[in-house]
Image (cartoon, rainbow, N blue to C red; front, side, top):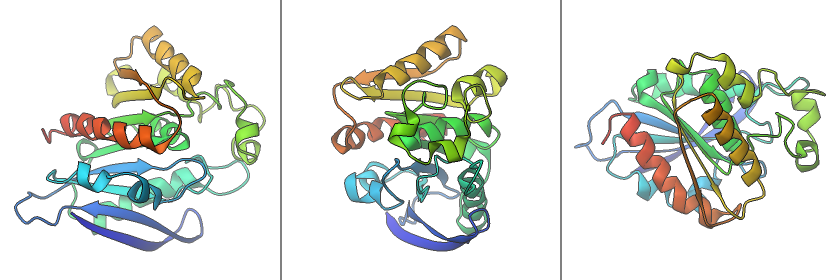
Length: 248
């Protein structure tokens, strides 16, 4: 696999930004490639997946690029007061589509992430279901916007980003899956560690999906909110996306 850091100017953020990408360098791997957009958590940046996991090794041999954006502390959302990180992510998808030999359509795109990035992957993947065929979340912060847990205590910028009462609004994954035709939703996979402080949020979202009769994969494994857990289980996410994108 080849690896690059790309510096670009984000029109949505109105500032310079960056992303990491790993992509096939074996000429025997057919083009166009699928793309897995892999989102980081609240306190990290675009470099963290490469520094703390073996994601490059896990996708080796697949016709798949992995794009790791810098989402700041923006919750992959367009802030009520502040930066438009959801628009930035969609802008990045268009940038990758026109710059790399990728399958520039829904059937060639997957999105996933951990914690804040798990929330972002589910929210963006469901809201923009015309762009992503496959979505996964590890230890996702799926319930804060819905009013489960104290998002403002975890993230001081939470109120500035989401406003005073975001529950039931366009940034709430619980509401999004209610409002969208279930037949056009992406494939969904959610996992969480049994010692993770976000476990209750993940169980609540799983129950909500079951109540709505939305097919999805849900698993719990031993582990906490840490890189040992995410490095182990991103391998299952890669396999999940590979199946859904027709790479296996």
